[in-house]
Length: 477
Image: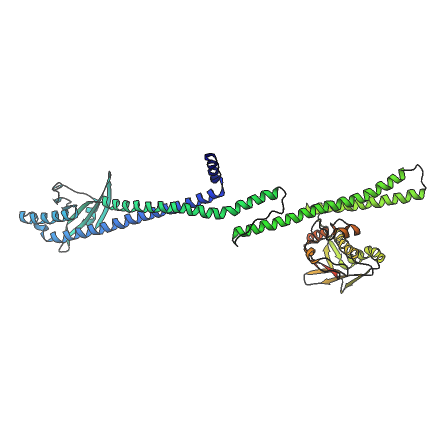
């Protein structure tokens, strides 16, 4: 049990939960630290300011009480009276009170230590200039506040009241408040830890589940899904993963079907050539006509193999961006007529009528050879999947900034669920029909790549047993 706990503890400190918790706690601790510093500075400034105000008020009271007696302070009775005043204030405020003349000589001291001595301090200088001043100084471990106010009689500064008081109580009060705040903040940090662990669990659990699902996908299990809860960012991530998983499954499924199709397409001509060659080798002598017929069959199968291989290599070159367009000014009308002329013999064998409609001659820059290949693939497909006595209509339309080449047939059509995928590599709508009509399922993918190289697009609409309409849209410039 102890080993299990140690392992789980080790895993926790390596997990995203710990990263979230530690980040949250560091943030909270940083905020609390800044708060404590701010409160401490505020309390110190506030208490110091309040104490300074009180001390200056006390000093002004003493100043106003003894001002009328300053000129006669050397009189024993007057001196005793003034001395009683400052000692009473000293006792009440727990401070030291000094009466200083204009020459900075200490006339009276509530503690009787500094009498007849000079006291050259900044506060005294300021008071002799008519400025009230109060400052805090630190001596070793103690804080002392000095205050000085002028003694004014008949609008003339005749002396200074100087007070010093121990200011440790200011910092002690602040520290007491801070100690209580620190305890409160520690409790808050402790509570925050459990809250952060709770929320980290909420956040990290779906991420860990997603990580496990990703591992399964990397092992080839493309049907893996994650449970999506909520519409937040993690939910969006889960939906994106599920969409990716579905797409990977579809791609893998199409890849397997493609391998199967290509294997069949390659095996068929190879098998035919093998049968023909075995037949030729089975006897020592054949008529020349038979030799020629068999060699024509072998040549036809070799051409079929070459077509399959060329299509695969061409698609690979497009995907690697190794194909560059050779633009030239082209009359699109003549290009379409050339394509129709090439395919017309095949159409005539099925009694399919091919028509071409164009309102005017259109001239743009494009790669003639590649666009011709694109049109041959699409128009050829239209003829291939249109039954006998059908029709294929090709139209050319001039739009504002683009041209549109539409190939419409009245063939067997494409199921609605398959329309979004017909340009995907390796995709076959009907395996049995594809093998019957030939092809590798690469023609439309190659056609789309060529159109996209021209910065164009292809739109498809189709209805079962009614026909298909494929429109190629190309920019004029």
